[in-house]
Length: 273
Image (cartoon, rainbow, N blue to C red; front, side):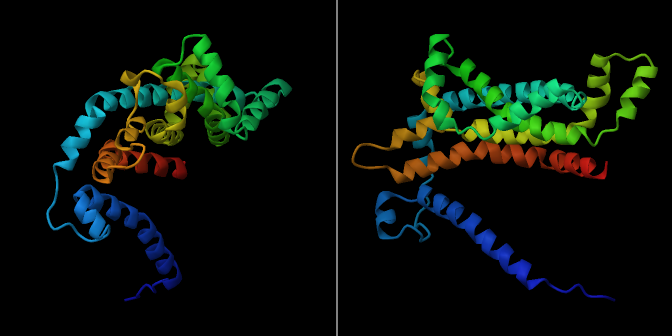
């Protein structure tokens, strides 16, 4: 019976990486379950009494369910539109890369990945306000537009691995371009669709920069924006702030746990294919 040797170098890297990930989570949970006096004594020690009341107080201060709904709506439509539009544009580019026009379009989108957001921030806010889109709808549009370059880069690379012969066979059977895309190509892109959906969902849910410059109406604030409610000019309520951070993090963790099996299966199928 053969015994597998332990790779201690990899094990040490794994332990160090786990510590870097778990330590901030441990500290956030400990602070969220303490009162201010216990934080002053020791920020890392386990609380003598678990103050679960910090969580409902944080929900009341941030209007949690209302801001949760705003974040959920923005994230949902950003993901749906990003997957649909990015996959269709990428398919058109990938299957016409031999022409100079589509090759130029591809590199145009690719170059956009290197343009930092702070350079565009002020003129962008000005333009969106001028056309009446400094709101949730405008925010969804920006997530679609800003994510387009990266998504096209991912989709085009993946589409190169899908044989053109599959489409030619569908042509012989009488299918048109639209039918081929939705019934042949789009299902085959499921692993990449899942990747783009996950990246977009994490970005839209956790993003602070775009909402802070685009949303001026407090009724449209997202969960990252309302974390400011715990900071005043001279102090910060760390107990409620960390409880609120965990509440904002919780939906994405639950979402990942629910769809984890589907995500792993999709990536595995893509690798086998």
